[in-house]
Image 1 (cartoon, rainbow, N blue to C red):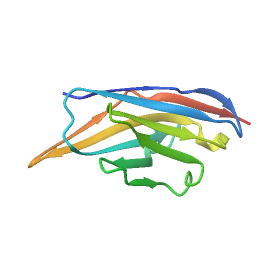
Image 2 (image 1 turned 180 degrees about the vertical axis):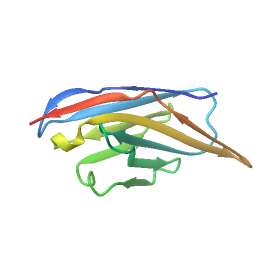
Image 3 (image 1 turned 90 degrees about the vertical axis):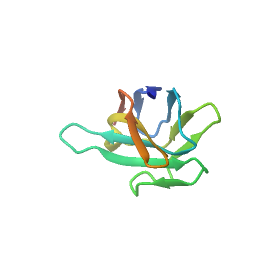
Image 4 (image 1 turned 120 degrees about the horizontal axis):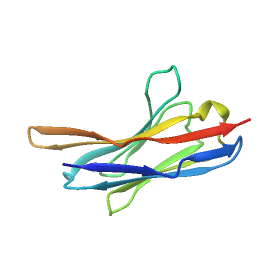
Length: 118
């Protein structure tokens, strides 16, 4: 079983920065994808950024150039968020999808609130 714990959320003014962390524990297969999602009130959860086990990254168009995803060897992923806007206000969730042969699993964190004031 894999557990994910997010941290780093909070209240920030527009134009500010925050860095979110997602610490994973448990056995993680070498083939994996770590992602960040967000869900604003009344909206569907959306993918923000992802990073493969090989370090390949991908971003949604709304955050490209402002957010940066990374990961370290200790099974932690990070989401550096710069030039924050009020529209970035949401609960941010991390997710890991991993695979070992025919076995695929998905795990989610509990979420961390990010609030950007105008």
